[in-house]
Length: 73
Image 1: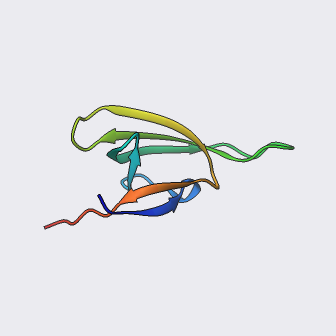
Image 2: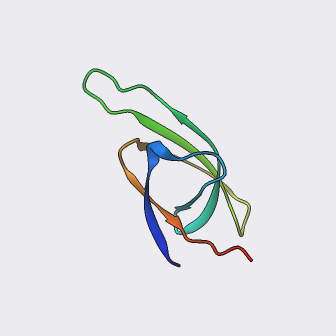
């Protein structure tokens, strides 16, 4: 599977990401504000394209995630 890097803070609903080795479509993204000594966090809720399994991850907004390159015909 061919992928490219995308920032967790720039994800939007409908984009594709790889979570636990499975291609997923993003259903919702919630971001928290940075704290005094912490970083902003993003809670990403996605659904697998093949198995329709719901996956939720929490990542710092500056982390990079893999985004699969999907050809639509």
